[in-house]
Length: 241
Ligand SMILES: Cc1cc2nc3c(=O)[nH]c(=O)nc-3n(C[C@H](O)[C@H](O)[C@H](O)COP(=O)(O)OP(=O)(O)OC[C@H]3O[C@@H](n4cnc5c(N)ncnc54)[C@H](O)[C@@H]3O)c2cc1C
Image (cartoon, rainbow, N blue to C red):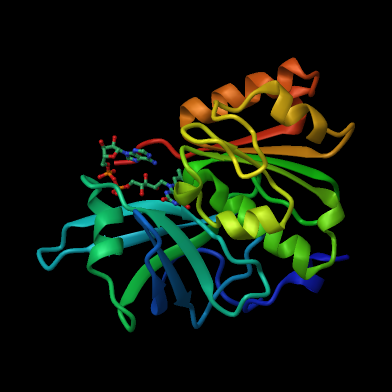
């Protein structure tokens, strides 16, 4: 498979700079918003990449934040899942104020390291909103018929708080819940070596994504299971104000 086989965006579009995206669909799962954007001059993305969304107030003040793409490259719209933080400047605006038909300024796709191209096995280990780029990888794996390459472990406090819980469960992800028992009977607890040991393969890349605390803990677990740290790629969603 070549890069060109899976890419559906506008190949001649400029790779940098801001472009305008139109909000075509909005849904509001608990404490979050899913925005689906149409980007007329969109650049192809790889699963795992992110965009920057910029908001500009009437007085010219701007605020911008990074958001991973949840959609697969073949999706005609670009999808973002954004956790609504009560005191969050950008996330609360996107969740509470933005409506279908609004325009947003976006820049991307960005990041060439945390990407999976369906060419080799991968293990995705993600917590909270960190599952978003893993969902893009899962969707892409399904689209190209290579789910055999994917192993996933995802964590949240409760199943209701796990983004894309149904999709991830259907995709065979190990569901790790810290505040309630998981549907498969796993007792509520933080992610542990016993969750990851059955998923670790001899080759391929481990993509670890989530809060700084989660990525640190997951990386230590993987290293403890003998995974060469050069096989681990980390994306931390820390505060970015
Ligand atoms: C590469 C990358 C990809 C990202 N992808 C996603 C994504 O797909 N979905 C998503 O929801 N977020 C994602 N984020 C996080 C996102 O960029 C923002 O940090 C987040 O939306 C908070 O912005 P805000 O303006 O609402 O909050 P701010 O006004 O910046 O902060 C408000 C309060 O929340 C705290 N805070 C800030 N960021 C976080 C955070 N990530 N987690 C917990 N507390 C925080 C701050 O310390 C502060 O107390 C990503 C970050 C990076 C770096």
